[in-house]
Picture (cartoon, helix red, strand yellow):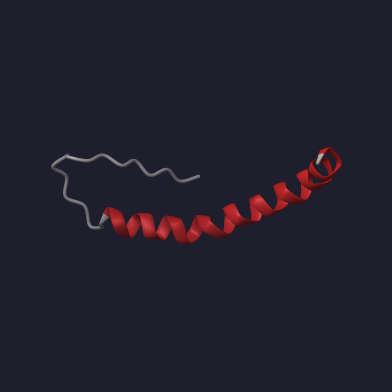
Length: 52
């Protein structure tokens, strides 16, 4: 598991930019989150259909 800490206003020089890190994180997470949402939707569909 990787964790990204975002601290602003600190005088620290880093070899990357936050917007680049966020773009990479979004590109990696989007497919994972989408698949998890599909799985949850498939699991919840019978209950939703029954109670609709």
